[in-house]
Length: 312
Image (cartoon, rainbow, N blue to C red):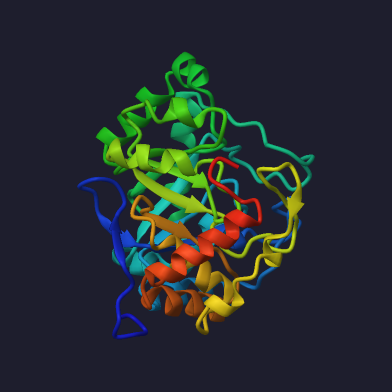
């Protein structure tokens, strides 16, 4: 049951697909300590279970995780597999199957062979304590050439035909995203996008025209104090952009969520947190609906004036 009588806005995860809440939950924050992950996030199981149950109690119906996220899949299975009918579940494929706490910085080696992907799906189903994944996404934006040479798409389609996976997609970035958009088998794309990271903004509408869903990661709060490159080549901290007088009582993450809610091409924004109060605050903001048109326009004007423009 929702914690509020007002429900969260719903969007189709892909054209003619199931509806999910615009506010999703990104479960990387449940990755665990240094014994399982290179970027430790120590968190007691009790708190992790409270976080996940708060997600569902707030009416959030889309949860995104990955084998790469340490203990995340295991904790989701422990905490909320008994509430499986309340949410859609997405995870990733191609990831190393064992924890990599001592691996050097940078992208972990991924394997997109059919055998490895199948082993990963079976492992994820066991850890998540479920008999199907609602969405399986290729991780780490592999090139189209890798997908073709390894028979990756055929492997994903077989898993979908077997019912282990309901839909297939990809977590994509430049330079491969334009080519990924042309692969008709992908039903959803997960992208890095925010008002302060707009490189992929020109492509959001194209995905919609393809009847594919768009899942946004990194859309709110992450790294707002760290300088980001702008169109002019300068580096500006997003937190320096004056938006407080427009917020009408929203937190910064809440305001940004409501700003993104005005984009009809976005299916869901996955916001991660290990704090139940942050989850409740985000849900409260999104229930208020999109920002008024004049506030949206002024917010985007100020963001653009600071150098954060579409395509950068």
